[in-house]
Length: 374
Image (cartoon, rainbow, N blue to C red; front, side):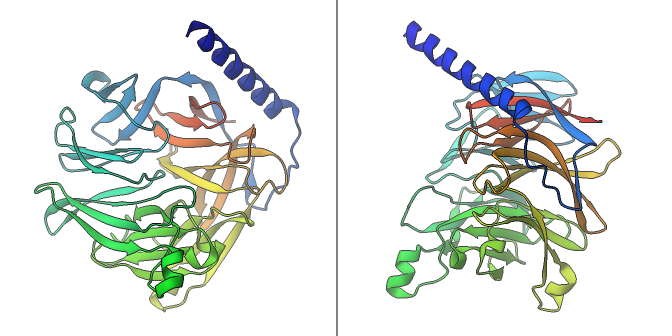
């Protein structure tokens, strides 16, 4: 056992050294778009961490470390419970009032005291933004989506859980493409990528994929009771992350084709027009985000990419995005040499000291970073 541990340790150490040297020594194409800035903000790598952030708001910070769940309130750390997370990368935690929901892999647990947890779902996993929690007619509810990898032929659902009475119901079903071919049943998708709550309207957005006829964006104006097709039908509508301004809805593209950040102005929706504006980026696919703020209060989005597109070089990147005059200003925060097309620094979250954490898929380790201004 000890010899196996040493071999694994040496193997991982060599891969880390090679990857980090390549990030420094191998030149990239330096292709840039007109709104790309690479000399203002950077993520400074501080080392690898055993802590895994789960949730933060103005009252509480919750994190996981070596089989234990902790909370931090006003810099006072308290052990909450012993807990085994099924998946450190694909984790998600949301809150409404006293209720918390924690998703890790295919398991969802809920708690009203962060100590005692009840499993309310075991099945398909999510990616990152896979759950939302909100008040619905005065009742706290959880809405979550299903995602599976590979060539799963089954259906995927949007589900609702009522915290107060434990009722679990299906809000919408997306059938498989195979079922659609046989019977014509709709809607159909390979899986559901993301669910997001629009903070300006309260509308709920979901994104599905992966083929053109499966890549669609749906919206609910009634707290999830119904979802209508907003737009879709090609790779421009295959997304893993939404972000919002008062005037527009933005999303990224998780596709093997050219990568973009895409804007849809709300006025066009009101006029029943779907007119999108594309802001191209390189490589791809574009993945998940951390929504945060700069020291001056400016909204700041940290977004990851892998190397599936590999159009210009063999790097995966972390981007910082500021929306200015409804245009995304993109900062290259970090880049890493990819050991495979799926290599990326997957955004996890931030802690109470404004350190940011990423899951390095090359080495299956959690990176701790600090955002610095050059």
